[in-house]
Every structure is written in structure tokens, then in C-alpha cells.
Amino acid sequence: MLHAVIGYTSRRFRYAMVMPNLSTPIATTSQASMYLQQIREVTPPDSPDFRPLMTLYCSDQLEAEDLIQGHNEGIIKAVKYYPAGATTNSQSGGSAMMDYSHIFEAMEASNIPLLVHAESTDENVDIFDREAVFLERELTLVCQHFPQLKVTVEHISTSAGIEFVEAHPQVGGSITPHHLSRNRSDMISPSFHADLFCKPVINSEHDRLTLVETAISGNSSFFLGTDSAPHPTHSKYGKDAKAGIFNAAYGLEVVAEIFASENKLDNLAAFTSVNGSIFYGYEPSQDSVTLHRSPIDLEKATHISTENGNQVVLFGVEEASQWTIKT
Figure 1 (cartoon, rainbow, N blue to C red):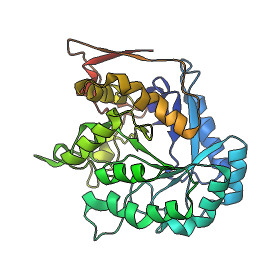
Figure 2 (figure 1 turned 45 degrees about the vertical axis):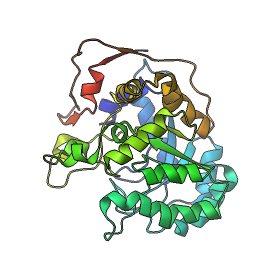
Figure 3 (figure 1 turned 60 degrees about the vertical axis):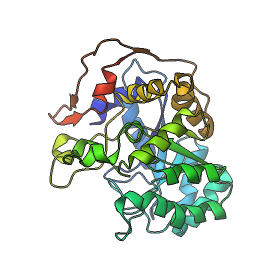
């Protein structure tokens, strides 16, 4: 799977924040180094400037000393917190964020960013309210106790997520192509579309419009985060659909279509290429990709296949048919 999908990211993006929620969580510097080497071995030769940024999984296996050493060596760039049971391979996640206060204290002192999957796993909370509840019950406490800790609310799905970032100067927020372009009716009406199932789930049209308004505004606290997650169709269409959307192939086209429809293409580069780099302390790329709006529908691939024959659906084919990209 890595070999099949890596080029879609490496040819479009200079930086990729690599998530640690593999079937065996990436919780040590040694594991992250091995994963980084695997990524580099299969990165296409036409992507020489691709820079994977490795993260560690915030779990009971994570040790502050190893984290700091890995960060000092330039291998570890951030830590990702998953609520246990919230999403794919999150079984090793936490039941309460403050249980890891010793880790957050070390991260704050060393300026290591914390990335957060902000979603409550309380079964009594409606699935469409879980982002707001998590932010109120969990992340608020962390931000209060560690005011210098750089935090990203990842893949924001609601207005509550936008409001939380705006209320906390040390917090940034990533927004995905699918949360910008789809709402929950697209996912569940007139029938359930497994290809649009992700966590946190795509939310209401009101929330989508708030995300769009924020993304196109140029606000430097918000930036593109694809949350691109490839799952083979047998996992997406089975009894228990895997949460995840593979959008690395056409994510830029989807976002460009949003900005074009709002007449805000002047702010596109800030959202896709500048704000996130600056937030994490990296120099924005001096190279560029150029998007051209096509007057005719271009045929685009709808699936990719792995070496063993698994198929993965590509998100954003409709939008991609309206654009061409030159690197």
C-alpha cells in the first residue's frame, strides 16, 4: 500500500506530517526511524525534495526521554494524540488527555507540537457532537495547563473546532478537502456511502460553510491537512467500514474548486502552502505547482491498485476533472 500511494503525496507536497497509527503504533524513535527509511526507499525519484515529518503515537509506550532524544536528533517532529477507540488503529490511545501531562510538559519545554484527533468516544454523545464535547472536556484543560504548548486540532469538522482555535493563540487547525466539500447528507442520503466515511465524520452543511469561510479567509491559524487515509475497497465496503478517505491524489483540485467558487483563489496558496509551514516552523517551499481550470471535463482515474490487486478509491474525481496541474 505504501508503494502504491506514496507518489500521490510526494509529487504534490513538500512536507507530509506522517501519522503514527499503523497496525503496530509508532511510539519510539527507533520505530519512527524504520518507518522513515521505508518511506524513503519507495519515494519516486522525481520527488527529491519530499520531506516526511515523523510523529510518535501518544500512548503508554511513549517515553519522554526517547521523545526528546528523537526530537533533538531531528527525527521526531510531533506527537499525535488519539482517544482510544476513536478511529483507525486507535486502540492504544488515551482515555483522558491529562493522563499524559508529563509528556506534554516535556513537549512544551522542547517546543514539540501536539497533534490532536479531537473526538469524544463517550457513547452517550451524539456522533455529530463529539468534536465539540472533546474540545470542551479534554483539550481545554490541556491548553490551560500548558499555555506554551503548540497544538493542532486536526481535521476540524465543526464550527466548534473553528471557534476553539480562534480562542487559543497557541492552537492551529487543519482542514481537509472532504470536510470542505461534502456534508453529512452526501454521506448518508439517499444511502450510506462508505467512500465518504471518515473520523471525525463529515458534519452538517452549516459546519461545512463555516469551514469554507475560515479556509478562504487567509487566517494564518488554519491550513490544509489532507488526513489522507488509503483503505482497500474490501475494508471500506465490508460489514464494518474502515474510517478514512484517500484524497492525496486530487486534494489540491478539490480545495482549488472551493476557492474558485468563492472567488478567493488569491488566498489558496496561503491555505495550502504557507500557513501550515510557518505554524510548524518550516520554510515554505520555493518550488510551485500550477493549477489550470479546464473548460472541458478531463478523464481522471477513479481507483488505484496495489501490487496484490487491492483497489483504493480516489476522492475528488469530479473536481479533478475540472483542473490540470503542472509541477
